[in-house]
Every structure is written in C-alpha cells, then in structure tokens.
Length: 394
Ligand code: ADP
Image (cartoon, rainbow, N blue to C red; front, side, top):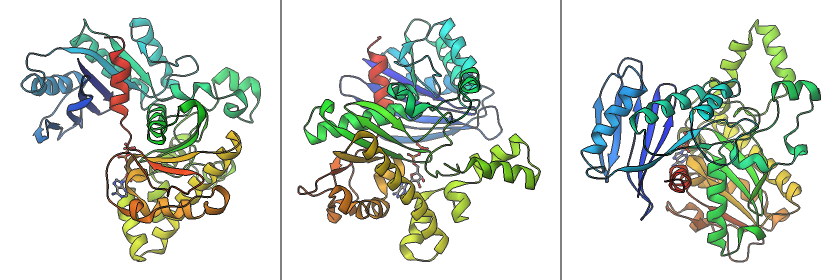
C-alpha cells in the first residue's frame, strides 16, 4: 500500500511517498516559491536527488509537477491508497485524524482565525489533492490533536473567562504528531508499555516545543494558542512578559502587525545571537568560544528547556525519560549535555558522553544503565506517523 503525505504552506508544498508494507519512504521533496518568481521543485527519489527550476502559479501546478515526477518513477503502475494532510490547527473540536469531506474542509478553512499562516494553505493543499485524487480518502492529521488530552487547568489562560470562551483563547499546543511518535518510540526503546511511563518529549527544531506525556497522553505542552509560546525558536520569541509587548508597541509606535513581525521573524536564536536562525552556526561559535552572544543564545535555549523539564516532572509527579528530537534535539550533543548535566542531582541523570557525542542516527539511549532517569534521542518522523493514520482509512 502506498500513501502520499502532503504538507502545504502558503508558498510551498512538501510531499512524501511511503510504502506501508516496509514503512520506507520511497520519495520525498518540496515545491518552493509557489506563486512567486524563481520557483523550483527538489526531491529525493529512491535515494537519488533531483531538482528542476519551475515557476508555479498555484498549488495545483506544483502538485502536477510533483506527480509527473512520481508517476514516472515510484508510482509507475502503483496507485496512491490514501493521502495524509498535515493541518496546523484543529481548534477546540478536532482531535483524532479524520477523513475530509466538504464540511470538514470548510471547518479547517474557518480555523484560519487560529493559524492564519497555516490553515488556509493547508486547506488549499487539500482542495488541490482532492481534485487530483477524487476516489481515495484524504485524511487530516492535526498538529494540535495529541494535546487534546490536556486537563482544563493546563490549557486555561489567566484572562477573563468569558473573553477566552468567546475567542477560543486557550493552550492548544503543536507538534502533536511528533510528540506522540517519539513518545511511542521511547516506550519501545525502553521495552516498557507506554501506559507505565512518564516522558518529557523535547521537540527542538526551527520551531520548538516540549510536552509532558503521562501514560501515553499529553497532559501539558509549551506552545499555546499559537506556536509562539514556549522556549526560544529559530526566529520566534517564545515566552515573553505580555507587558513587554505593550511597552514595545507604545515606545516604538508599532501596530499588531509590526509587533507580530518582531515576535515571529526577528526574535529567538536569530534575535539574541545576531548570527543566524540556524542553530548549527550558533553552536559552532559556542563551541569555539568565538561569540559570547552565541553562548548566551544557547544557554537561554538550554535553560528554557531545562525549566520545562523541571515543571513537567512536577506536573507528572516524576519522570522516567527525557526524549530529544527534531533538528537540534537529534543533532546537538553539546546542548543535550548542557541540559542533562544540570539535572544530574534532581533526576539522577548520568549521560554516556561517548554515545551522546557520537554522530549516530536512529533511536538511542544516551544515558548510562545506572542513570535513574533515562535520556533518549529519537529521530522524529511526522510523515510516517501521518501515513500510518491515513493508511487506516485506505
Ligand atoms: P523544522 O522545524 O523546520 O522541521 P528541523 O527539525 O529540521 O526544523 O530543525 C532545524 C534546526 O535544526 C536548525 O536550527 C538546524 O540548525 C538544526 N540542526 C540541524 N542539524 C544540526 C546539527 N548537526 N547540529 C545542530 N543543529 C542542527
């Protein structure tokens, strides 16, 4: 069985083709700069990389270009059994993955209020793919879904209750597909049922979030109504005193749009370091001790993660494992070490530095067998998780 997964952004369309028998990715890639000049599509098909320059007016042209490539290769003589669509925001109602019909598509569009950059683009991708594959199930997998199990006291903001109800203001959380996937893999790695485990999952990538996963269910997470809350990210601020926003808007004469641009695009790793939003460049300077702002940036990130781990240990009344995932979590041994060393007393953590530093792939424990709390690195695979959900409806 072949499943296609799609992740549509406002000017991009990411795809993955997965063989569900082997769970191997046969092809993946992205069409970028859709609707703009200098568009291109790049892919890896059965291990071979390729790229074409192509101006695409809309997502339909992008999907056409992608499918042409796939039909000539991995989909030759094979049909797509279902399409899994990543949808950023499911709002208060959508939890589990769901087969999309016209009414659901409309609801996804209406949720643009919560995710103005993402949901309209996701809906556009869905419409395009539904027109191209009218006979197969199209399954929406919501980034917010896994966090539906949070108790009300974890998702309620300290704002007027009626205002929150009226506008749907509450913590929703994101990266749910990833948190669920790595929590499940952590249980497998530890050889224990997930129902018996308390895990803090740290998804640290361009966007970052931490989740408290107690007995397989998310009970709290660092992102909120939007993916701005929590630890610092590539260009997003993470937590700031709300009073700071009021001060900046007043002093700098900014409206909501101007303030939003600072919070979304000019803050986080980029904002503090002044070097880059790419963690690799900052980490290099941190290691080489060539920039004190690089040190500061990484320590602000590490300290932020550390505090969430402590908070979530309190929320779950203990932890069995801390799991790192996504670009920084999987590839940043120095940051993992910085965090875990500081938790040595509280959680009895002992890291095997040799394993931590080894540039290995795959699921692995980086704690020693004597460590009271386990520490794992688990590569996330949101596409496979989406494909598994979609395949259930095929
Ligand atoms: P996205 O949220 O876009 O999926 P990723 O999970 O790919 O992001 O993470 C991107 C981040 O991971 C970037 O900051 C990048 O610098 C970082 N990263 C990737 N590889 C490494 C590495 N080897 N060392 C440190 N950071 C890395």
